Image (cartoon, rainbow, N blue to C red; front, side, top):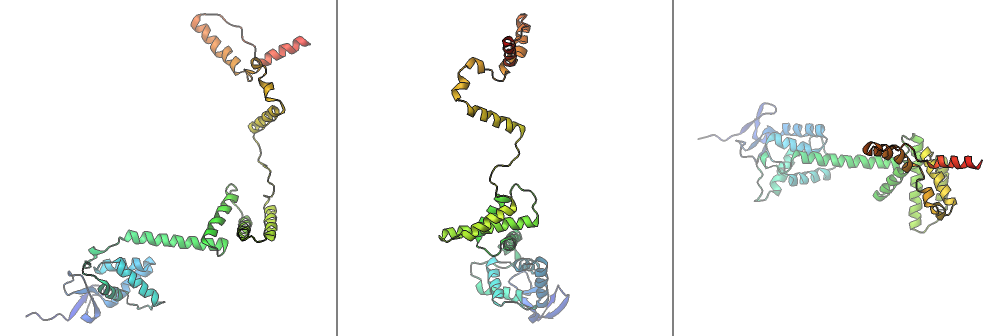
Length: 300
């Protein structure tokens, strides 16, 4: 007759303890129905994983994998709520014991929670969620540093206006950044007051003063024009000084305004025709400028 088992061996610290020093395991492969790690080693394992991964969920997932029990998102949610309800937990808080107790309490007949193979969430999903939450938190903290405490839609408006002002300015100095942010905040204040039909006289003054300081109160286009821009602008001004019909009155006179057609006839069509047909056309057509020079000479 086999004697009842009263002790178990901990593979964590390599010692044998009474069964009271171990947690009961749901895993049928644990031959004595207890976890292979003692309670103290389980606690150390979870705490070290929390310190390593900076996440209770990540730490419990890895710890469950180590001891051979399933990580169940629903059970962990209850554990997380319990931890938050306790406020600041003590160093010796019994994470694994509470998790196993909650697993037993909330287990349904249809739930197959035995070994780690029954885990219902991948570690990658936990890491992705964690990184997303951290990025949102970091972004929120940055917004607060840049703009102070605002509503979410106000942050969106402020970021949009700041980007509109600074998009093409390159690297800004800290003082420039501060002034542009103040300008955006004044705009936001004006917007809110306008919505409430309130007076915005003071805000308008602040806005004009900030624009003067930043040198953006001159609304004329001061961009340096290229030579091509200047030529086009001069041609437009010249055309606008005349009646449109004037430039189309003598179609023959203006049909080759830039001399492109004459050049094509003299230096492409004429020599090609000579080659193909054996003709001997050597006389070049006069360009508009050449004809004007001849006419000017005849007058003198």
